[in-house]
Length: 252
Ligand code: 13P
Image (cartoon, protein in one colour):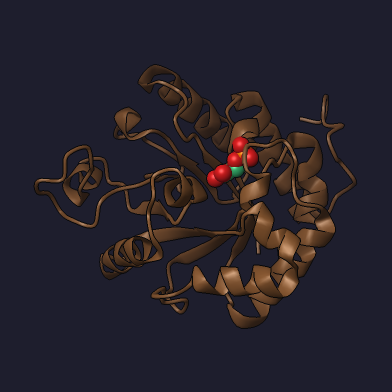
């Protein structure tokens, strides 16, 4: 399976810079003929009818579990439909921990978007104190984040994002990632991404970890040249051509 490369813009990039970013990535995919799946989750104020190559998908970082209605500050599916958006991130730790979404809220949203056939990138991961308590506690915490979630859903991508690695610059080690991904894959046969301080220069090592099907990147993906490098590295690795790491200048 080809590696999946996803960028979560979070609360970054304006409408103008988002369009420039997406156009540049799209042109890169067209020129290079790279066919890895690439996903970009911009801020909702930047949604537009982007003309993108088949393997470049624009998704929503969040939306409410309603078509429309009185939910001040939320988006409904009419707002996603307007731009043909059929992909959504659900369960991101920033929504769970900063915006206070409970597992019940997350499951409600999941089931709503599942019923509509959306591609769902479902995020889960443990905070530092849980990791420090040990592997059993970590796995127990993760399984609770699957409460109410149909893991047999066809259009599901999972993303393991340990909370302590998100936005901290400290990625999980490849050993940590290998351990968790193996446990998850044993029970759930779905594409499984890793997210949490992935950088251009750590990408290859992470993608080489067994059971890692791709990455969901925040900070390091917001510079378009770096995001393009990540796509390039993922593609080269699939072709199994050589060790590239981050020495990719002049390779294009
Ligand atoms: P960072 O890459 O900034 O750690 O963010 C990861 C993430 O939360 C992606 O959804």
